[in-house]
Amino acid sequence: MTGFTRRESPTLFGQAPAGYRLTERSRVIGSGDADFTRARDLIWLWRIQTGSRFLPVQMPERVIVGVVSQFRIPFGPLRPMVTCRVFSVVDEPRLAGFAHEAIRGHPQSGWESFLVELGADGDVTLRVRVVSRASAWWMRAAGPAAHVALLLLLRRNLRSLDAHLR
Image (cartoon, rainbow, N blue to C red):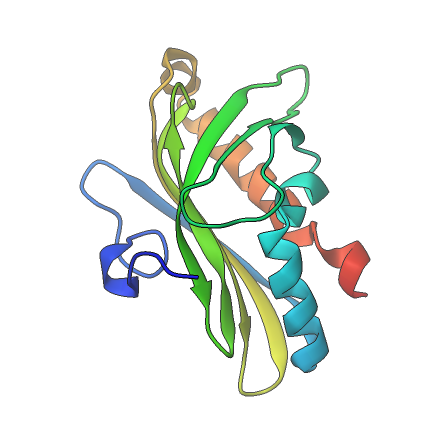
């Protein structure tokens, strides 16, 4: 699996470009090689999205560079459609995951990444990074409430693999 290098992607490791906001959250989700391997495989099978209660509209079987996914995100009475294209897949001995970009009418402009890392201490950490700015009028109108909604969705993301690992 190949994609952009770490230096080319602000979503994976860098700073946000001007006009974009970087939001990053992480959580220890397991311990040891077996949990790391399981979490890596789950990420590539879209389990963060489905475990976060996103409703698949178009979900390729597996995450690979170039695939397009489309989900509806239940948030209260709302079900906004999000469409993204995977542009980077990371597959290293202690780090794995992917990054995708918002496309075609996504309510936000930007990128998001999901990485799982096996630390030297054996902890398996899931890290979600979002580099974004509002693109839909209703997201801009929501102002600070839109960021609060993002934080709630990130909390869902960080707990999405729990049933599979504990």
